[in-house]
Image (tube, rainbow, N blue to C red; front, side, top):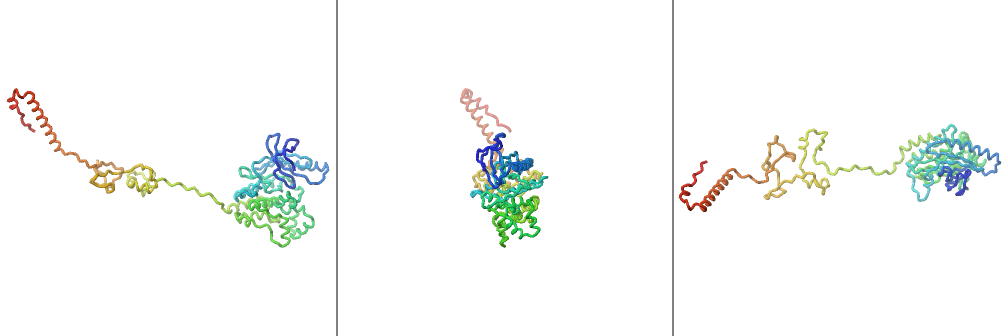
Length: 463
């Protein structure tokens, strides 16, 4: 195991921290002193056997060929390989850095359970990446799909770490007694563990298979092996229960017992029967019973997504109601009613207090309030409009209910004076002026010529 600040690659890469360990090597975060950026180092190799210099050189050449092919792999759900190098019997792939963490974060005690819809979306992305690897001119098997090999980015998408194993690479048996081996044992199909079994164990298990299934068991790993590993990863992620390893399941079946791997829907109630059946099919012990390719599993996933259990959704948005509800029976619409007079005839006078109560707008002023003038003889609440109390400037063209839009003149109870009264007042005022004038003349100069004043009395006015 590498230590922090250890320098590799002829002084170019400095180890920052260890992220994961398994029987093949480890995963490290390192600093690239040339590009001044963090990278991910994937360590592999170390057979544990003493090898000659020639053997080491041959192994180094094989790794270089694999790494060169991986450097040409480009997929949005695969971590791209930027560089590679070897040191003695250890080999390193330099991969792009990814913000976020791997899927083992969901196995922490205080971690939230991932939503089924999110896991299904990640499954679709992973199947697309696996399909890409299997469809290359020289197909590449990943051989190491598990939660620690899947990175969840800050954009909530997944990226699969590139394992860098060739299709004809030797299979290394994982031992349940080794803590590092146990971390990968539960995600590997029986055919991937087969090479590490002793001949006696192989014979006992093989005898329980028919001829066709036995031939499948001895075949090299293929696309269906990666399908099993993906199914085990999804099972663990959705149930938070480590799936029983394929070897233990095989031994239980040999003893006539039921498969110890329970259906996913029984250990995870949030998973629908269709999604559970899909994952359990990927986890079949016999590879001929699994999905034959990533394409087939992806097609089945598309069907299962349509019938998955609906998760709790946010309540739908309710359109706010208008502040004031329309009072007329026929709402006026300028586009549908081209006769304004007819529209005005549909309007009704409403008591302002009742209108406010009906519309729940008690404190806001109305745009129009019609409040009649009351006389002292009648109380305000007994006032009624009547034809006798209305004086219209022009006769109405038709007899109809008067509305607030019609032009009206209102008599407020003040009647004009008659013409006879005006004549009486004018005559009285004129007589008063004549009397005042005569009295003034008498006081000033009337004493010297009294007779003349008497003889000159005014003649009656002829009308």
